[in-house]
Length: 281
Image 1: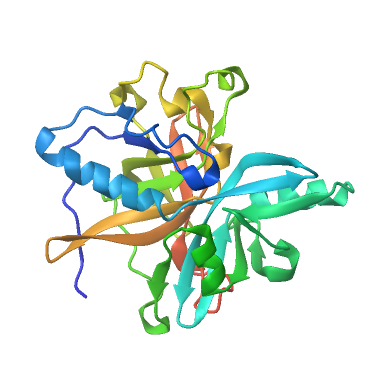
Image 2 (image 1 turned 90 degrees about the vertical axis):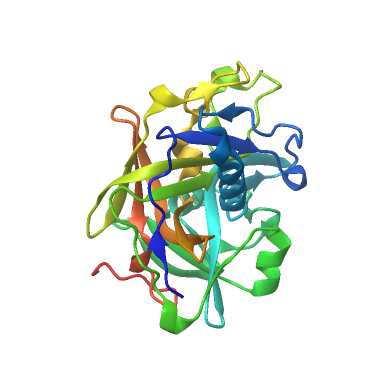
């Protein structure tokens, strides 16, 4: 299917929207609270794009006894041929393993699905900061998340170019000083921005936070949340074919530089069709 990069939208560089997910115990009425001013003729497209991107993200949580520690990271799912994988950041998995090694009775959950990540681990790389786990299609269905579907001959997808419109979606961790504000949503956030640089390993996006307009009066997600919960989130290139938007997985979010307002993602083409990882481009 022929694709082309969507011409840069006539929108302020960052447009953020939180989405409630009742299945995760999140306020379902907390929708569209934070937006950036944009021409009205594009607003419906923004909402559809961000809502679709958000539906690919799943929260990673840990269950410590009866306590659930939410938003420890984000994951997403890819199907390549007959195989299905869960993808997240390597350091999210390492943090879980450190907790387990301390003797804690800790369980790993992606969405509402519990499993032993050690038994499912296919690939792990600290330089790429990616962890891959074996899944089944039925298990992915239980998470109620969308899955990126590819056959082996079409993987990996094309990479975006500098200036391309991309969205990352995940579950940021609420800052301690914000936890008592009942109106804040600790659910999934989807943010649209542009690619500012691409290297052999990573894709970089600079977030122009001065263009966020907070319509709720509660503060932007950049002020109220810590971005560590976004580790492992999918970076999605918004491309277009025959007047339809395409959602192409392009990277795995691994860190945020608050000083320079830079978000970084490892390129998705480091993942091989069998779920292994390759550092070479």
